[in-house]
Amino acid sequence: MTLVSMALFSGFMAGMVGRASQHQERILSEIPLSITEALSKFNFEGQSTVYAVCPRCHFTYKPEIKQGSSRAVYPEFCTNKPHPESDICNETLLETPPDKPDDGPGNSPDDRQRKPRRTFVYHSFHDYLGGLLARKDLEDVMDKACVDLTESMKGPSPDVVTDVFEADFLRSFEWKDGTMFVERKGVEGRFAFSLNIDFFSVEGNRHGGASASVGIISMACLNLPLSIRYRPENMFLAGIIPGPYEPHLTELNHYLKPVINDMEMSWERGVHYSRTASYRSGRLTRSAVVAVVSDLPAARAAAQFAGHGSHHLCTVCTCFHKDNVHRTDWQNWETRSNKEMRQHAENWRDAKTLKDQKQIFETVGVRWSEFWRLPYWNPSRQVVVDVMHCILEGLTHHYFREAMGLKESSSSMPVSRCAFTYNFKMPHPADTTHGLRREEVDEVYLIHSVLQKPIQNTDANWVGLVAKVAAKHTKSIQFVCNDLKLSCEPENSRSRMTRKQLAGLLVGWVSV
Image (cartoon, rainbow, N blue to C red; front, side):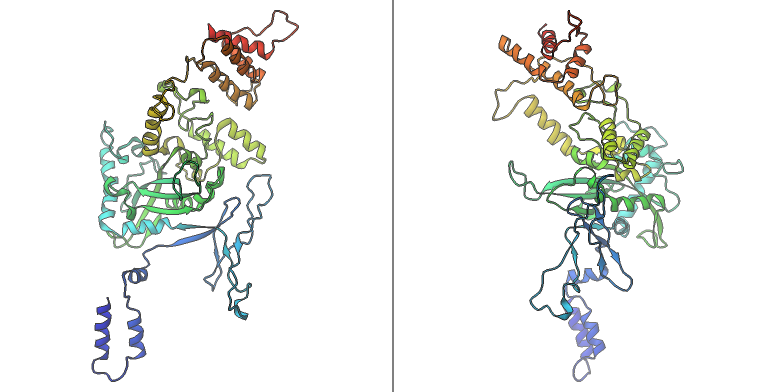
């Protein structure tokens, strides 16, 4: 590119006396001399929006651009109400740049632009999709995926699924008019995406070390073949969630809002591109998030379900309580109703008090998520735990280290954690017939765990077991006794059995 500039300069100077004209010098100055400079002139980076982020509640604010000015204007204070009854956050969003040594009349603090204390940079999804459609090799295979699936749906489902475009979900994923989403209308483009959320420590993973954490929101086009789907140049980085701490509870919604805005528009109205690699006259496109793929904590946070360690242990079926973690009778599992989940989420969102929100969440384990703005959202089918976290770092890790006890520090530990198993009955928080408070429901589970733990057959251990059970609430102990059909009525009907006596009944049942 330097040689091109020199050749052009020589051409300008041929037959001339003196220096080049002002017009010629301007042309020479506009010729890029590096790859970076050349790419910048094509504006390949796409549009991005810098949101101001509240350091306290993570609420995001889109900048306003005043007419006749390119300066982004943000509010000075956070106006978000984190809870229905809470006051406005009122945290300061902006900071004043430090004074310069040569501050003059035109560089006073009032004249200098105040910048956000914390930012979230969101990259436009529509620009990203336009970049994919500008490449003919990609646009053709993206359309071919829909054509192939439409043809394959004329026959039975494949016995072996090797890609998401062969799975039952996309074969039954409907468009607004009742037809299949992948059935293209004319030249219209139909594109399916997976959305990924993950948090990681920027300072490395060390036991007892620093725990600064940032997150990423990214997307992958599922229309692309698996061999090129996850190449960095083909993926969409929506934004990086700033650290050092992860968003708490519903605060992740604030970072999801920009990408959900784009996906909602792409579904409802569609996005028209004036020209693509294969369609010189342009085409309309519609895109959908068909899967949210994350590790278990991030997946629960994105869908605003209760954590995986809670009694609401499953996002797919109605199995409730930790006591059901090891159930394997999958044929008896009942799928959650998506209509009911959406209603619960809307009830939580519209609740007038924090107490009402907590009551709804404790009962059903669902809060409002930005994903519910998508009319096709069904978390029981679209929330996916990725293979790496689920199998390699989850099931395999648990099997060898926990089940088999293969640990360096405790190689002699017993393999079994339970002396016996029993199908105990569990109360549900929504069931008020038992008159148990939430903490009493939790203690029922703890009593089950204590009773099933192995102990040495000595008098001291049996006495200790009675003491452990007797430390729980009376109603919790009575519930377990009634479940086992143990009589809680003393011989003298005028008095009631003490907790120690009730605990003795349970321990006696265990010893038998």
